[in-house]
Length: 69
Image (cartoon, rainbow, N blue to C red; front, side, top):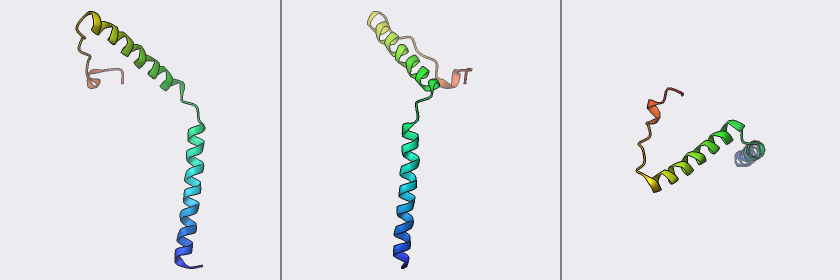
């Protein structure tokens, strides 16, 4: 087997393995923790959009000021 043929075969095997790994990840459910976070963010956006129509937005603390991390 020539060097190019070996390299091509190796690249093909790598491609196949990466596809299999990616397919497995794609099929996994989104963790509840992330779904809950998305729900919180959507609720916050909805609340903020309603607030901006009636009054000026209140400045939000920067992420670094949060002690809950």
